[in-house]
Image 1: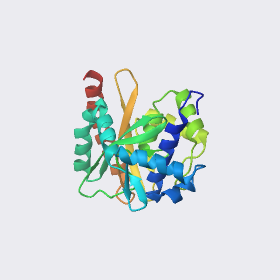
Image 2: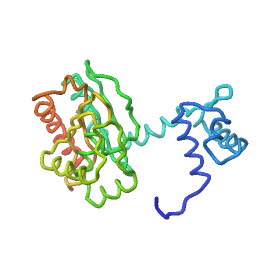
Image 3: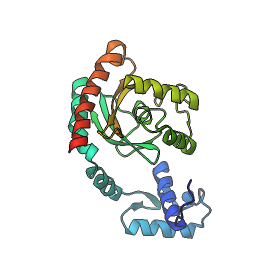
Length: 252
């Protein structure tokens, strides 16, 4: 956390929204169990959010409303990388039959900007707009490998290296060794580091100023991500797509 001034009520509002997102839906009483606030105070926050369209009430239960889609859609539409990468992420999904993804880093976490599904793609727990850790995905490590080392240190200090599977990297030194190999190869591999049974291959998108803009990937079940397909064919397709995206981002 920083020492910058913050508005307590705004932070409380966001915390309530995040708790609603985590729960899926909740009553005022249920939410009061998570906060040092009276039920009347929480009710007032929720009434305000409902009146502005950010929360939906059904009976005594509240959930996050779809108005947030307009904010997220606006932010994504204004992102040059999204427009440059969109057709190529779609093509990667069509070519491989798997799931293709675009991820960017913001505030030390990864955010999915785009997902595309091929004919054989499997469904996972992730979705457009989802925030994920960077250390346990191929996309995230591809980005980390091309950030300044002090920035990576700061991200690890703030967010830690929590384990999501037994194959997640949780040691800082091991992570930095992995990032060095990614820089040398130009490609990152995820072997069930975030989701059991899922493998992923990713490459960074680096602009003409040598700044990493994000990363693209192809992911699928371990049973299909084997041999040359996993180590050569998919990485080469990703590198070809990344090269075009980088040129479009750098000279748009």
